[in-house]
Length: 110
Image (cartoon, rainbow, N blue to C red):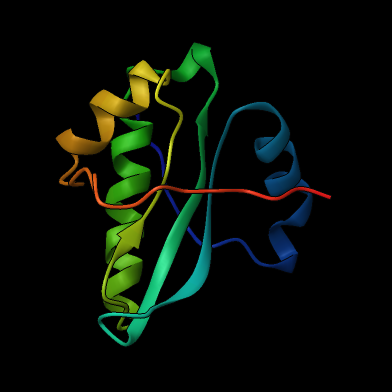
């Protein structure tokens, strides 16, 4: 299966919305790493529709996100996932992510 990963723009809005809602998405948000004093990206959402899993989309998305870090001179990517996310917890280390057991993440929702 051949596919292309590209940054969406306004010309791609309708097609991107369809993909976002139905099939596969990756969202990155810019952050600032307080120790490295450098820009980093938060990999916020990575979703591949079950019908498309096992075809390399997730790995390709992550590799493209790493390339984006190089292009934007960011120090890296960070992400968090549920402890129960068996697929993600196997995927991310396979793609070079290291588990950070030093931090607890807390949330306050209004």
